[in-house]
Structures are given as C-alpha cells and as structure tokens.
Image (cartoon, rainbow, N blue to C red; front, top):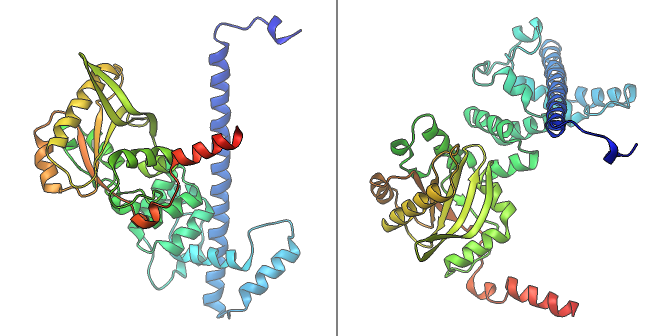
Length: 364
C-alpha cells in the first residue's frame, strides 16, 4: 500500500508535530542529564584530589602520572588528560560548597580562600552549563557575579563555546540593558524590564569595513550583507522582516530602514540607522513609524511595537528628554565600527556591485 492510499486522520499534522516536540524535549532532557552526571563526576574527582593533596602533600608530578595511568587502564574513556584533570581540581576549588555529592572529607578540607556562596551559583545552573564552557569561564571571567551572568546567558540563549567566548570578548554583560529609553514610562512591569534587557549600548558592528564619511544607506547595506553576524550582535530572538520596508500612508510612501520581529517579546522592532549624533526630531519620526506598524502590521496577540534608534554618538540626556514626551516605547543606543578602514584603503576595495558585475561577465 502506497503512502497516497493511506487515509490519514484530520489531525495527523498536529499528531506528528506533537510527537516530534516530545522527542526533542526528551533528547534535550537526556543531554542535560548526561552533562549533569559529567559535572558531578568531575567535581567529585576534583574534591578527592584536593583532599589527598592537602593530607599527603603531593608534588606537581602526581597529576601527569595519574593522567597517564588512567589512560592506560581505561583507554576508551576520554576527558582524563593532564590538562582536564587540573581543570577538575580548579573546578572544585572554585565551587567547593556545591551540594553535588555528600563529601564529608571535601567539606572539611575547603580551600583557605573560603567557600563561594551556593546562592550565587545554584547547583541547577552549574549542571546546566557544559564542561567546556566552565573551563573557559574559569579562565576568562574572574569576577564571580559576572561569571554567573554569562552562565545564565549561555543557558538561556543556547550559546556554543565559541559564541560564549565572543560574548565575553565584547563585554556583553556591560552593554546589555544600557540603552537610553522610555520603556519604564510606556510599558508595564515586567515587560519594561524584559524589553530593556533585550537592547544593548553600544552595539559592535566590527564586521563592517566603512570609511569615515560613510552614508546611512551604506551602513544599512553592510548590515544586511552580514545579516547573520548582525543578528548575533542584536541578540537571541530577533527575526529579520525587511529592509527599507514600505509603508503607504494616504498617497505618501515611507520606508523603514530595518524591520524585525522579536520572537520572545512577541512584537515588531523598528530600527532607524543614523550617522552622527542623536537629534531630538529622530524620536518623533520613530514614534510615527511605530504607530503605523502597530496599525498596519501588529496582530491582536502582539505586544506594542518597539523602536530602536542607532546613532554613532547618542547624547543620553538629550535622548531621555526627547523620549519622555513620545507615546511609543523607544530606545536609543550607539554603535561602533571598531574595524573601520581608512578612506584610502576602502576606496581601493571593490563594491558588492563590482563583484556581482564581474561574476556576471565571467559567466557570460
């Protein structure tokens, strides 16, 4: 009997979708359980080594010998190199009071620097972070509240290790939630806090190469040409809707620089790109765009449209005064082009149009 001859129930698509969702959920739970057990094992090994070192005064040559003997005895087991065993010891010493396993010896031999409060690093959070992430966080983020911020962000956003390193390198924890805005005045809590935390200041567009006198349209073109990197910098949840998005009002045409939809906030996000410093009239224009999007695009279940004005030099005091009187929720942030090329070098590079023209000629 062929697939076409089988009469499927009316809700078959829903059944298939529900089963796939359950499978993915179970797979996720299984991966988290495996990671939690790995974290338990590594912490336990670190605690055991720490206790024996303190009791017996081991020298520096014991761990290399231990790694070699473990490899010879358990050649199929991975993760017990000298480097990783030292990480296990460091991991225990970073979090000596985690209630991972009842370890009386370990608790009575806590490091002299003192235990870190369990409340700062709850067990559930520690066990949700992959081991490779822990290694990078211990090495690169010494401030403990900042380390916790990156742990929570990595879990919430599903960051890979490379993405985590990129976020640490660009000091995302400092930039997150720093946009000047009127969200507290225009949105109820906790929506205002959620929206505020979704925006940064400044945004780093270090993947662009623009000369000093660039035009706003060139910035817009560059961001779209590097859309994946742009979305990564915007943050998790932003879905691209359109560039120069057309809005017809009466007999006039208006165009939004960039339009996004935020999947978590459940709202449209209008982005207006500006070269130079912030000007008060930008707020009125953005308020107009948000009004139109709310009227023409917003669904009944959507939250109010958010506006984000990106300038090179936003004056926070000026922005706060300008935003105070507008109706719509709007934020103002800066952006930086940290890898901008000098004008002499930029002028010698082919444009996107030049490259496309060459490709077309080559294929003729």
